[in-house]
Image (cartoon, rainbow, N blue to C red; front, side, top):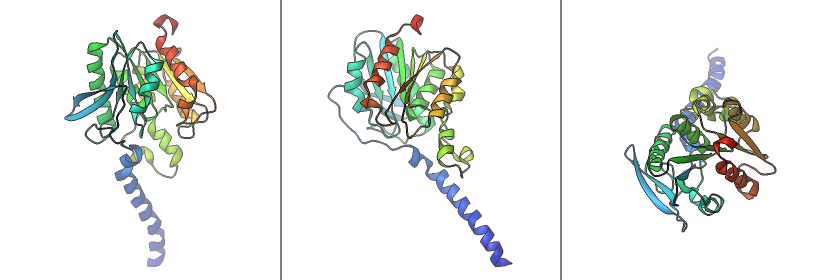
Length: 260
């Protein structure tokens, strides 16, 4: 009897240990901080946020328009400077290194990244009254929360998802991820609070974010608010290889409110 009970309890105990391991290590599986890098085409800007020093790459240009960019969970945003400078010549560019990334201090978390995004936006808006916000992959969750709390001019979401919890459920169907996840990035729930025009760019062969997760996010915004562009034949990390990607963003950012 005791042996049978042990056989029954052993898998339950192992499952509990696995859940505990996932809970306590989850941020190490979400965030992959990048080292300090350099880019000759931009200057560094340092801002304070909740006691942390946040570094952003800046390409300064005259005029009221700016673009604020939040990258993926392992992305060195400096790698976008040259392409963005060519694609968006009428905007100042601010590419944010998350806390713990690219020289910024601290450790990444959803609450921390969103607080930093709000601080950077408030700084940028003092100099540029028209601030568009762009988020890619993980950064789309940061961008949506920012746009739900601040008057952004336009919102661009690239390889985006409705909820990081829903994405995780697809990978870990046998785990109660809804109970375990601390950094949830519930973008679809925030979408109704966003008033700006929205562009959703989907990689046609995205192997990381399932298409239904991007479609669910697009559907969460008000009718007529969102434009969806699917770039065929590219994956989650190869979207940059298609000129259609930045051209779609360029056209969207260049449009007036009346064109939306």
